[in-house]
Image (cartoon, rainbow over all chains, first blue to last red; front, side, top):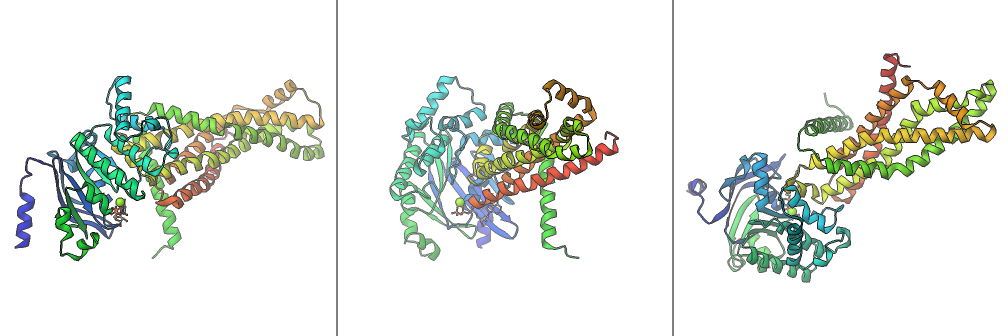
Length: 257
Length: 256
Ligand SMILES: Nc1ncnc2c1ncn2[C@@H]1O[C@H](COP(=O)(O)OP(=O)(O)OP(=O)(O)O)[C@@H](O)[C@H]1O
Ligand SMILES: [Mg+2]
């Protein structure tokens, strides 16, 4: 019966307001099975948190979404397009619409903050007059409250500032979807809270849809519309914060204690 | 039959490096070309190693001359000193020593730079920003080392020969023009050309191995350190191996 249900689900068409539809995703590295039939739907304007323990494959999941890793099987549809069967050009176009905030920020060490923000625009061949480009950079920095760092090098920034600059660099292309990989890891509680609020602000201001990977429960509480729990490579539960806090699945409840 | 673990690891590593090199040739000759980054790398790589290579080249020429003199005096051919020194420098010592210093300086810095870019996801970030990181990082650097090392070797040779001139003049009194005349009398194209050609291979090996080690760096700061370190060790070794092959080839071609 249960199998029938699943089979039925995975042939169902994607509803209109779903901007991302992940189905039956499998990926393994050698004998290490990381994702084993994971699925997830992201609705327009929604902020969905994927909760999972360290090493459960959360980073692997979003790297599959952006095409950095190729899953063994399954499908990922973003804004109606199949990510997994794209040629390089299509994928690059899609990547302009999906922002990615890396777990380790991934700011280019050898470039100033300005050059870091310029890089995605220049490389995606977004032809802007010098003035407009500069304006965009300033706007992105303004959003994260760090206009004064524009000529600094990444090494001169604190962890929280780096995270904000990385977010600014993600925002510069005005993506429709943003993927956040543990946006508050390694930050103190106060800075974490600030970043969490920043994420909700960005969400409202640019009407983006987001997937946030996290196990920082205060951040999760602030940003999440819905939470999906990743366990043993599958989606074990999904619901709002208060729904899941009352869950009687032991592994799910543990996060909320 | 089971191969010993260390041999297996070695073969695996050699295979991976060969595959990485193959990828270099596939990507290098297909657009889009990263000219800006290539020129920037040439400048950085050349400029960064210039002082070190200049100083070591000078000392090398000076010391070599001072060391050779007693033996030549013993044989009564002291007049051959400029010729001997310049031959040794141009044919062997200049290219090899310069390449080794280059491996230490540039190989390690490429290994460390790409290694830390890898572990802090900067390489992934490039890829999602519409950039082929292999072209942008690896192809440009390897092309730059391949091109710049020969230039550095020629400079180093020139400075060494000048060091040799000073070395000769410690005990004797030779004019610069006489010294240079003696040098060019003995030097032949068959000395210079193979020596310069092999430096392209040295430069290629140093860049390739530095990039390979960095690009495949293991997670963590330790991994980055290890990449830088093994890049130097391996590329130094490969410089000697190429040197060995080069001497056989020139011999076979009758260029000796
Ligand atoms: N490129 C790769 N090659 C091989 N194994 C990998 C690779 N990337 C990830 N893995 C493995 O996949 C598993 C999940 O890794 P992942 O980085 O997704 O964990 P995570 O849930 O993001 O954990 P964390 O909270 O620590 O970031 C780990 O066992 C890891 O070793
Ligand atoms: Mg992770």
